[in-house]
Amino acid sequence: MVELKWHQKAALTVGVSLLLLGWVSPAWAQFLTVVTNDATNIGATSATLNGELTDTGGFSPLQVSFQWGTTTAYGNETSPQPKTAAGNFSAAISGLNANTTYHFRAKAVGDSTTVYGADKAFIYFDLKSWGWCPDYRGIGDVTLSGGAILIVRADNPEVSDVYFNGTFTFTVPGQSDSLPLTLSGTKVRSLFSLGEQNAPQRGSFRGLWLEESDPDYISGSGHVEQAPGTLVTTVRYYWFVLKTDEATVPERSVGGYVEDLEFIISRVGTYFDQLVDDLFTRTDFKEALELVLAKVVKLFEEMRNLLTPYIP
Image (cartoon, rainbow, N blue to C red; front, side, top):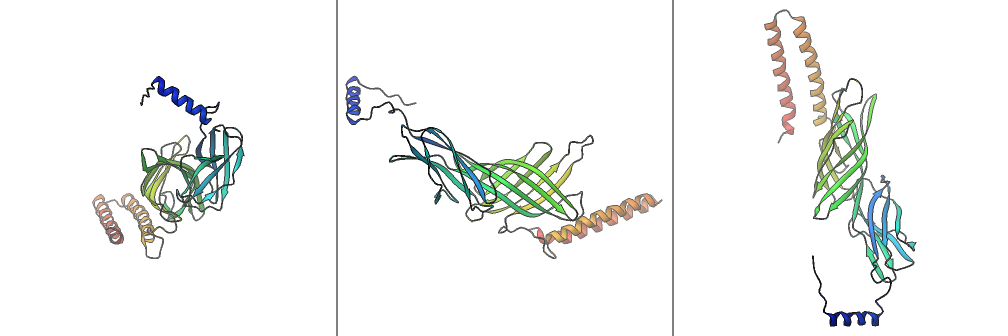
């Protein structure tokens, strides 16, 4: 805390000077201030920017608007709105791109005085790739779509808190699961980690997120656990990788990682079916156990040969 002490003569001099300059008025203690609030209605191509004029500073009328863009240099501005009193204001923007981080801040102008609110950011995720759910045969298509706000921490501008609200979709031929998903976490430089611990879903998503490109370069992996609220609780697990189009992760190419993984999943299912048959149909336990162990060894050998090229 800074304590200011005034001498009587100095105070009188300053007071007279302010009166002569015309600075002392009923609005002398007022300051024009504006606050940037979180974006809402975040979509793939549009969003609503929000702000609040908290003090007019004695100006009436005055103009409020938003600066926005893909960096803190902004480069765009919404149409000015006239205001005569403190209060909330908003503006819709369009022509946006998915998977692109947008920055914005509120602006207020009174005569020749201009003030700004703090910078805020948002993004609309439209991530796609593949995943696996043990309840289904084969690899499925996975999407994660929805809006997220980024709040830069005041004590460290390289760290942002991230809040996502959207939908997770898993699709295999003849079946599609769509789950609402709310994730929160942090982004530290180019790394991010998001998670949710609220029933009926629990999930996580983490990976690499670079904002230097347009759209952003996003690549990560995660899982979702779904536990429907039934009398007999069952849990359905989804494992997935997600990315923007520019990000490079193992793809579903012929002879590639996913094709090999599908083969392993299918082979594991087939092997265990055969193992159950062997254990229950053979009367000689020693012979059945030898057969089971031989098949397990064979299975792990096939898995090792298929996965070796993908292990550094």
